[in-house]
Structure formats: structure tokens, C-alpha cells
Image 1 (cartoon, rainbow, N blue to C red):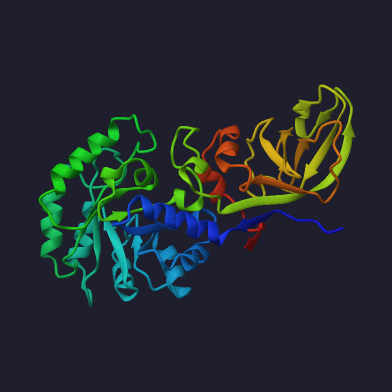
Image 2: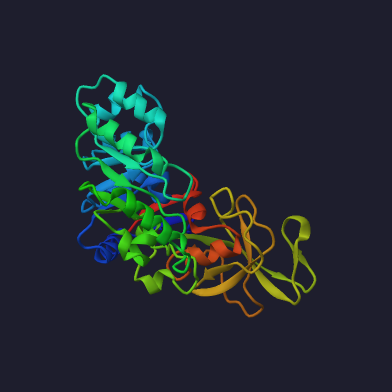
Length: 361
């Protein structure tokens, strides 16, 4: 009997369809597709090669950018955290990489470096998220210093990052937008503000560049459950699946798994699925977390183990060893699983481990 071990199906057409959907939100804007954290767990190089229509790619760190270049990706690549050390700057220049500038140390390093050619720079302003970015009071100084440097290309992109765009009723986004406008409206430079939630919910933030991340992978970036991926018109790119490796009867009152943390209230049939936290399935997924077995929802019961989970198939189950189980993706939104695991979809997607088989469809 053939079993399906823990496997992540990557749907390239869904990815392209999602890209086209996002592009339709802002048809005049260029798209910086965000591929950090191994393409949100989908495969860094794989996602880049599947999106030749993107205008640029965004990664967090230099090693991710170099991996893309090694894979033959020639599109512009932006380091979203910027460079970490002075010695990185010649590497950026040789590999035609762009960098965000968000602190004084980076400003000093880039203006004092000896480079063979200037670098393309994105200047990040903190408009209220208070994570990365220069203060509004520093903007003029940074902008003028970068503009005067022979190490910096003339067309600096002005940008900021939205902290609450997933909540349309939250006034923070309008506050950030107003400050960004106040600081940058007098400049003809290209601008970028919209993340995934901004692309969908905040037309005023789309400017010249949009920076979709999670939404490209078919996951809703919005906080409200009713603003689901389906309602946004996007499709899951990853479907995580495995197989039943055991089907066994359980009597009322009998416990399952480590610590006997769940006992069945009635006679039932338990299914054991070959996946666990060693594959990236969330350790803290609680009893009742939905799993699709043969296309129907059944609840997770008992503790998640390193290599296995158990589900209550029901006393009338006809499921058999080898049958398919879907943990999230097609038919079961990862957003829903994340709620049961008291986490967010980003973490689930990014935590897929190396032993999970990848199949591109």
C-alpha cells in the first residue's frame, strides 16, 4: 500500500492568479513581490521563478538575495532590512541589489564607502509603527545626504510600513498616511506604502510601488474572519497533506496520546495521521482543530506529537489506512487552523520543515 508522507503541494497557477488579482487592485503600480522567509515557506527560488511578471522581489537579508542571484534571477531585488555591515556594500553593488536605509549607521556606511557604482536606495520613514525607519524629524537630513552622495542613485524611493492596515476601522492607518503625505508630497520620487492589507483595503496607500506578501500565497491579510481569502478572490498556493497510517477503535472513556489529554465521550474510531510538529504542524493546535479526511472535516484530538496527530473519525467511519488527509490549503484555510493553534498563518507557512516533501503542481 502506498502512503503519502507529509507533503506540501505548491500550486503555481494559484500563485499567478493571486498575483494578477493583486495587480488588479493597483493596475498602475509596480509590484515588489515579497519572498522573505523562504517565500513564506513556499520556496524562495521557486516562487521567484514562477513570477517573472513581478517588477522586483523583496527579501529580508543578503543571503536570500544572493540565493536568488545564484538561481539565475535577474529582476531587481530589495533588501527589506537593509544591509547589516559595511563590507556588504560592495557585494550589493556587484550583484545589483537594492537596499533600504532605515538608520544612521547605514547612512554613514553608504556615504563613506568606496564603491565602483552607486546603489539604488529605498529610504524608510517611521510614520507610526515604531519598528524600522528614520524619524520624521530626520527625513530632510537623510534625504539630502543620500541625494548628495555619489554612492546613491538619484531616484531614491520613499517608503514606510503600515502597522494596522488589516483593520479597516483602525484610525492608525489614516494617521500614518497623513504623515507620509506631509513629509513626501513635495518630492517627485517614487513612493511605496501598501503591504498586503494596504493593497486590498487602502487604495490611498498604493502609490508607485505595492509590496504584497501574504496575499500572494492565497492567505487573507485582513483581521476580520469574514474578509476571507475566498472573499478577496485569492486561492491557497500551499496545500499540506499526509496519510492515515492507522485506524483503530476507541471505547468511551479511553484516552489518546501523551498525557491522556483527551478522552472520548463515546465509542468511536480514531485515525492517526503521519504529520507532527517535526514537520511544522503546530504543536499547540487544540482539540477540535479541523482536518480534512477524504474531503470531510474531522476534529484533531489529543496532543500533537513530533511525527503524528490523531483525529476522531467518528463511530461510523469507513476511512482506511492510506487515505488522504489535508491539514490546510485547498478546502481548509490555513487562517482557520491558525486560530485553533493561537497563532497566525505566517508562522504556520514559514515553519514547514525540511523533511516535508515538496510537490509543484
